[in-house]
Length: 329
Image (cartoon, rainbow, N blue to C red; front, top):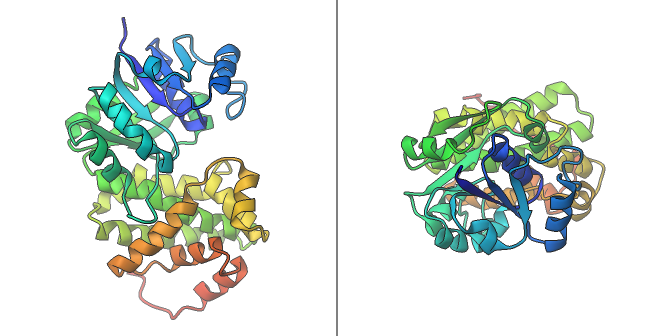
């Protein structure tokens, strides 16, 4: 009998990861928040809300009962929105002795607590791991080739956690830089909003390329100040995820930026997308974190002001372009 794994969070990403875990017959329980939704998904054998038409493997079961989902699991993947994870992790830690893998990205706007710090606080270094990198849920669910990073306190633990995902179309690289992987995954969402604004304002490919490049510079400065390693930020969970999220049409944060460029306020832009865009909360956190660490992040600062309604998108672009010229490095 193959070991049982639980995935918490039946959105697009959680569903896609549950499908990867179960494709070769592993018993996987996908825990949904709502009993009606769980029943509908179990009967339809797909996620009609987010991934319609992609059928579940036979060994994947959807439930809304935490006890059923967590009992006897050897690993748990948490794929809820970042702001909801803190309430879930204590119960996960109590029910599972194996690896607890965070598949969410974000940064607390008040405490600046990163994904890795949240995970370590509730689970402990000997079991905590983070899965992050360039990975649209729709493509993962379809079985298209994906390369991603698993980070833990040791490379050995990262490899142990990665071993549960034994699908050859889902290639996992290991890392022991949890800070870099956590911040790369969080901060790139803010830059993606900026890229979406540039696209929405029809500023051209030159401008979008500049957003990605200068955004990477800001990401590396801020994450580096927090202790992240440079090579991590140039890898899949940094540059790789940044490029995908800034340029891919499936990117929620890019689409949010495009809506802001049309003149929509933040709440209306999020309502149009219909899913959580983590960059909104992360922009506020990046602003506060940069101020506390005295790190210059003008692009992220501009995104935060636009999200707060304190600056029009076009005005933000004009201000950024009018900044005094300086050495690139």
